[in-house]
Image 1 (cartoon, rainbow, N blue to C red):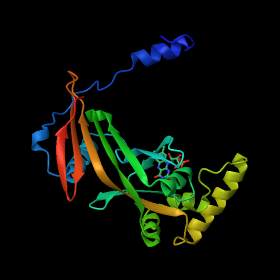
Image 2: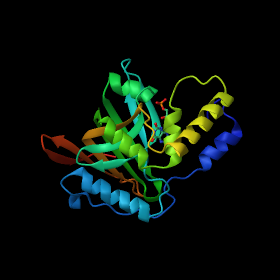
Image 3: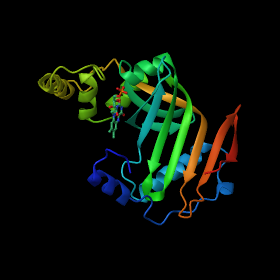
Image 4: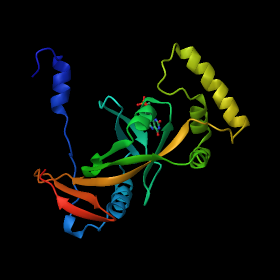
Length: 222
Ligand SMILES: Cc1cc2nc3c(=O)[nH]c(=O)nc-3n(C[C@H](O)[C@H](O)[C@H](O)COP(=O)(O)O)c2cc1C
């Protein structure tokens, strides 16, 4: 117990459980040769198991100062090019990725006690890809992108309300409006780790590492 934590917080914290549920088995020797088919399989299983928002992930970056940073973003796709996400180039993460084009992703699917970690180099997709990505989404997504200025200091909430109102109007009037800073990023993985929690704490960790065009697999101690 820490000296200055509130007793109520301590009690709540200690009363929480992880994986208070039946966990699926995972036999790593039956896993495919590359990580993408396994990611697709686990994603489909997460959806089928009722995992809320399995397409949200932690995105870790570091800028020129080398200090780590992390936030949640949505997964926009996963294919042979890599794991796709989108954001503003001028945001903090956008600036960090420009300075140091490497990132890590973390998915946590507690309904099945599963975690997936992805690491690799990040590139930016061509602007037309970002445009198509944004305009395939909702009016709200377009309005939000049109507001822009992500991660800048906001002087007041009415200022945001005014900018957002104008952006919603524009998104409705001009559904093809460009949002120039909106960028699709693609993380080309060179390491992907699949973690399956186990009730007896014999968790399975299957780590794929890129070896040229092929992947090698190894198990890691939990
Ligand atoms: C569930 C969820 C999904 C999010 N998805 C995105 C996203 O896809 N792109 C994005 O730029 N920000 C997204 N955000 C906001 C980011 O977490 C973050 O606040 C924002 O991108 C600014 O981060 P930065 O200052 O590190 O650049 C999401 C937040 C949450 C909670």
